[in-house]
Length: 264
Image (tube, rainbow, N blue to C red; front, side, top):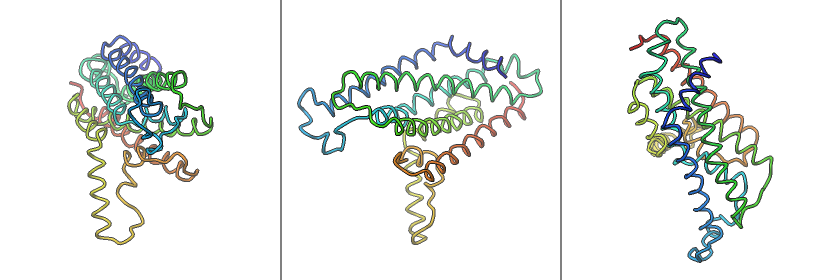
């Protein structure tokens, strides 16, 4: 397994797309810092107190970093990375040269996902680190905030991102193409699915007065993207269980598909 991960990481580090997306992640971190600088510090005197009205008078380390991870824009970057990496491996990588002569094909799928997660984590560190570092150095409204809140929000956001990565990985494995992986990934990342989920909530509320649960309670994007990090331990545990369920289901489905299908 370790050797498979090393081989995947070797290909990843030598792929042009990896470095292009790394540059995009850095630029995205700088862009997020620039937006916060304009809104909170108002260096050009164009906001006229709008930051206070929007509740953005200060930025903490937790809010800066988690705003990167939970952003739909960064989710698109992560989705593109996961899809391009996993599809390249299925199209012309180990699937044709190694997997076809082994019995435990699922191990290659697991190793590929772990490698993709390592690469995605690197993008998180780049984008979040740049935004956090620039904010700490040049944002007057920046404050370190609570270390506990930083670790809590960062950990929960990262767990959610892991679940998203498993879902994106599954669609790419299912359709065996970059287009098949990127289309559902963009539907999730752009909030199109979230709109459908809200319509489902409205339908349930019309049919049932004061329903105990709603469809959005079970959808990953609704729960992760809208989670309140000030929530108690019970809510945090529920979110982690939901994310773990998606990871197990999506990754298990990917490994099963790889194990059962023929290599082309």
